[in-house]
Image (cartoon, rainbow, N blue to C red; front, side):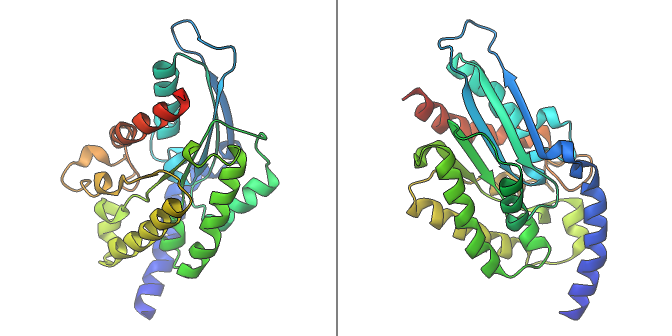
Length: 244
């Protein structure tokens, strides 16, 4: 265990170094409105809030190709309506960091859709699992408040598995996948208890060694292609609800 901690601390420095460029203040709160190419059906734009960490911020790729940006574009096209996107996400964030950010940088009062993908840094930084058990439900409560307590307007996305990347392989910790499964199983169970859709994309990330095009150029995060595959699973349910 001591060997793992020592090696983990050294690699944590490398991990933060890889993620560092996304840690600017400007990257934390990003708001953008997108109009569809066709005429809008309604004068009211759809408000979308994306909460998370580096996987939401688009670390390792052009941030314009992150899954929230791609989802914004897909919704504008599918719903023929304007979509306003606000991103509260930063590389290296754990659940407590996201809670603090939401308290300090209060988003708008209400949204039509909130996505939440958080927890990989809790696992990577060897935080007690009990911390996630305590803080993840608090983040879900916050997300529910921001959509008028309509659980179907919140979407929880599973944590990708970074073991299936060159960086993850270099770590040499074979229990990474098992620990990420524990996080995802908990998130899935809490989402189900609250009637919140849970989208499992972890299997996509676990193809990263066989299909290297799913991994970003930093050998750690996911690529534009991988995020597009996320959308194949996210968009149908979200569009169905937003049409109601």
